Length: 233
Image 1 (cartoon, rainbow, N blue to C red):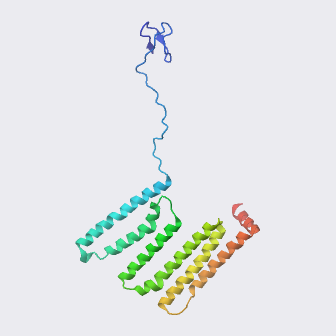
Image 2 (image 1 turned 135 degrees about the vertical axis):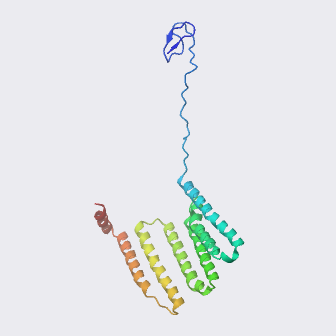
Image 3 (image 1 turned 30 degrees about the horizontal axis):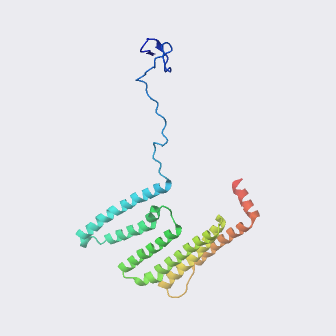
């Protein structure tokens, strides 16, 4: 409750002038209402930047123990032979998993390229440590190259034209069949000279059967409708 400072008449809460003497009403203790801010008080972090922040913290967490191990290696070289394995594995994990997450936009071709060379260097490192260059040349290098070529071909095939999930699945099963055949071929050629492929044929036939099923389903609308009704109704 307030009163006029001149005539003492009782005033309502919302009046600006005294109704009797027209004196300006002054309310020094009235709290001013704050207008809502145009900016939110909560910090919003987009998903891609949140991914990069998490990858950054994981990278720091991976770096610190490696620096400690390197310092330990310099101080005690005779009892720290395991350090090189830890450092090599940490570098492999960083470039294979964390490096793609640190990018503003993940480019599949760059990820596959970096991962390909990262895996080759990692395998070459162990081949050098164990003095087994023949294993690297005859098994690791060709299998990694085949995997890289198949991965890039899959991405190029998808990027040329838009593919539905059935065509993607069929192409992926074909590539799995090729990968298993090549893998067994290089392994058997290293341990048993000569062209011998046995077990991968079973896997390849199974994968090609699935690929054929997806191709038929993609070209047959009646089959697609029948499958949709069976699993959705």
